[in-house]
Length: 123
Ligand SMILES: [Zn+2]
Image 1 (tube, rainbow, N blue to C red):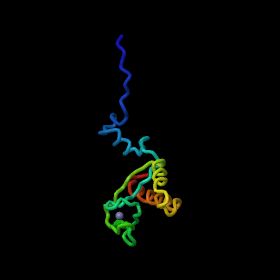
Image 2 (image 1 turned 120 degrees about the vertical axis):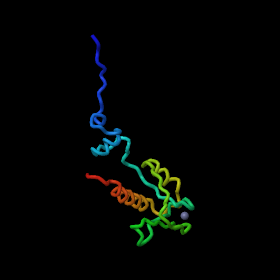
Image 3 (image 1 turned 180 degrees about the horizontal axis):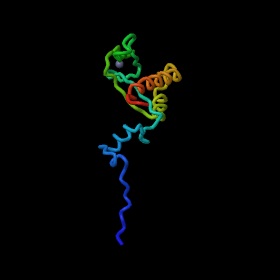
Image 4 (image 1 turned 180 degrees about the vertical axis):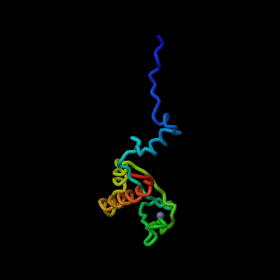
């Protein structure tokens, strides 16, 4: 008696998707790899400072200005960190930090607004 192999064909194969990733995207399934508490640091590409903010009146064109070296442009350096890494980062900054709470709020705002753009498809 020959036993049949117990390999189940994944749904994404059955439905003719190129990859599981493409299937998940189409179905709106979020990969578990995506951790929730990811902070996005914005750093100046010129001096590496995080004292960057969106230029006033240039929000739509996403132009950034560095308060330290006065750099401005759109090719801002982005770095994704976990919440732990972010806290560590704030720790290391130490006395340079004007107001930790304010800074965190600021980052959260930045994340929320950039998330909106990424969600292109339906809900
Ligand atoms: Zn700079």
